[in-house]
Figure 1 (cartoon, rainbow, N blue to C red):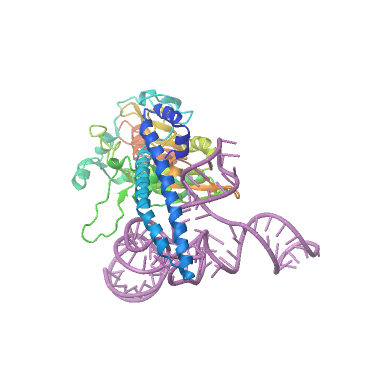
Figure 2: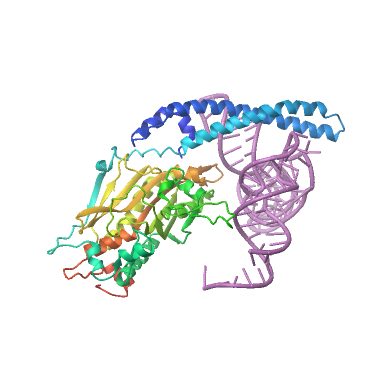
Length: 428
RNA sequence: GGAGACGUGGCCGAGAGGCUGAAGGCGCUCCCCUGCUAAGGGAGUAUAGGGUUUGUAGCUCUAUCGAGAGUUCGAAUCUCUCCGUCUCCGCCA
């Protein structure tokens, strides 16, 4: 959520910045509602103050055995006005809230201009795509032939866009996860284990709700005996539970930065991507991901994003996977992000760079929704900044390892860094 | 799943319709005192939002005692729903 004060103070400036990401702010509606908000809120609060003061007098008069009937009459005339004013004020604030919660973050000054994916800027490349002296297969051909990947089984037990992995392939995915977690721990991230289902407050905190409900899986409730009025959703990323660990907290400045890493499955409905990436492990309803989250001082978030992105790069480098670093343009960054870097890994099976990590600085956008603040000395609490990124998307890393390390005979060499996690096995 | 107890500020803990944003204690901050240390004395110590304002200063108003709704002129206190914690029994990885 944007700062409502900033919005009031410089509505046109905010609209201007939002237009860079292709978002048209409804300036007229906001202005009109804001005027009403002020009127109604002031009126309601004034009436409340009057009511409170008369009520206090009733108390006093009663204690002294005086006649309270005139006071009761007085407050009675107030009552209706007050109720009306309160309702009006609440209604306007609800409307404003609804608009504001749907407004995306402002792009950071260093976020490149542009409208779509086409305008993203390549920052650097690492590693040379290997030249194969045979026809490189994609990960599906590579693993199906060995009986390690079974799409039909996944469809049978669940549906399309799920997968069943077996044997060395299943183990390789686990090895990748362990390797990533251990590596991030060395960089000072505390490993956390978190729920895979979260409530609406958590999803609002990180910005998935109210706008992107259709991307999420909602848990159906048992009509008969579920009196619980909380709706739970499967997490689309560990960002949600991990970042929400600090929701509502006031941290001490000395505690910052808070660095956490967690591994979870992620669940996405992939609504609106029906025809896309239907083959293999690239786009699944359920996939594994290791996520890094940093809660930082507002002056440190820019460098924290660089650092965290670097931590994601380390994984790719240690695995020897060629990749490129992209700065997403204003039109392509996510709703809550001010700046985003994507890491794209080279996939020989398709001869393309594919997104394998997305690292973003949300500045105070999530913090404001989360009410996560810190206190410097005796000062007032101020909002933290949040930064997070995948380190990495495990399923896609699995694809990348398979395709980049394949041999002509259909075997796959295990990268050196992973061998300890594979029990010393060098080739599968 | 059954039975019972409970949820108050950073923490402990009073309060059981009005004078309570909330006693008291602990902790913390500042000051005084005391060769050092320990002890003692004094003051302060929630958050959010609004109005005013160049201002995140000051002043002022509103809201908040697990959450939400209700009763009432007035709710931490009464009612309802939900969430959570603890104890006992049952079940269970």
